[in-house]
Length: 66
Image (tube, rainbow, N blue to C red; front, side):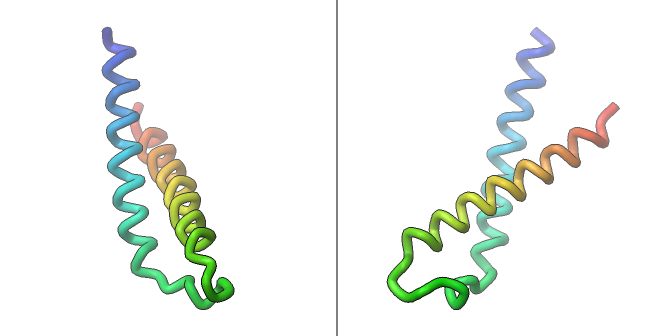
C-alpha cells in the first residue's frame, strides 16, 4: 500500500511540475527561432521542453527526500 502512494504522489507531482514548466516556458518568446507558419513545431517544442524540465525538477525534488 505504501508503494502505491509513492507512485501516485510522484505522478501528481510530475503533472503539477509539467503544468508549471509549461506555463513558465510560455513566457519565453521562441517563435523568432523558428520559420514562419510552423506553429505545430513550436507547440511540440514547448511540450517536449516542458516535459524535460519537469522531469529534471521532479528528479531533483525526489533526490532531496531521504
